[in-house]
Length: 234
Length: 224
Image 1: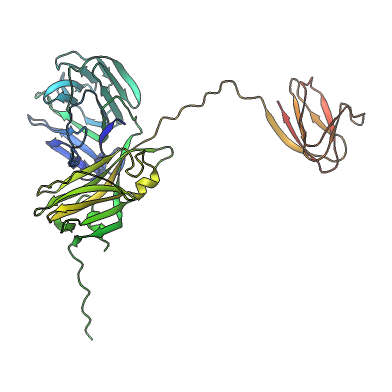
Image 2: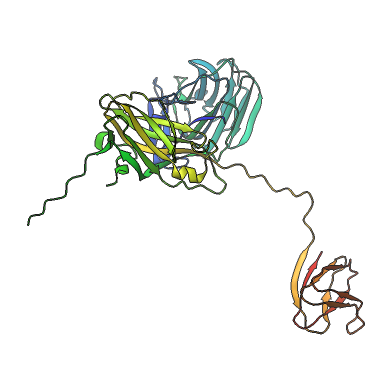
């Protein structure tokens, strides 16, 4: 089966990512499903804000970036504010080999999403939108070695032949590019990655089940220890 | 307080409450809340999550168990700051097949001390990737049958009129006694339908037929 990793952004789940940078926060107001979602505020300055998405786990159970020839991502997205400088765009999703651009979804100042595959300077090969602000979309992009498929809310926006130019080992949601623009605000939730072209569609959600029952325990001691019962004065 | 409450806080509460693994071989497991699946929803993958740290020299692993079957990380030395570690499982460790709801509900999340001591677990839980497969719309090969079930007739012992619209065929099924069929009320019976057999009369030119059976006989009727 192809799915390799997922993140639900339940409380404190930014720990599930390879890295975060800048203003990234988890909160109940940002959710698509479950209890919490994640907000990325790409700032109006020269700094950045982003999530580095994992596409697998290492042997110790930590989210990891692994080199793959096929890189598929699905994520719920809700734009709350667009880049505000005329003619500017920013990276919404950036797929790379280390820092070398392989594919990206770019967000224009007018709310249009554009797909680029291959060299970063290559022209866009498909577009979507304009997106509505404040509405959840479920975006899925599969980049394989010779083709791509892009879906929004389960419907194919574009598919065809294009080569990313090599393997991929990293992806970032929210990534500053145009320092002249005034940033944007993006909510994300329910992220998954695959190592082939498998899509799970807009019904995908990540649920977190908190513990609510004892199992077995020996040699693990609760802290703080239970307080002793009060002494009874006869 | 049950010991599982020491690893139940969302978000995790650091060193305020935790379970401390104090010697090699020490293990704990906790159960997760019941997963509420929407109709048709499936479990694609599960990941046990334990947020822990090392306060001394503990080496250990995080585990995901279903029954006696365990899937775990490698044994390793966690760092000194709390970090969430996952055990990712596309299939149930018990069956090596896709998760069922019962297996998810029976899953146990925990950790084992391998060597040393001082491992502190402050949060544990189970994350699930869920999706609902697209519903395949029902596409009949032909238009639905032109069949209408009529109210059953309870025989009175006399002729009972049944109008059969032009072009329709009347389906007659007496349950417990024979039924006589007439084209003229009070006339000679033209057909006798044996009990518990089904006969189709038609297509009709728009006639009325008369059915007669022993009092109380139920006669099922339909038009097609």
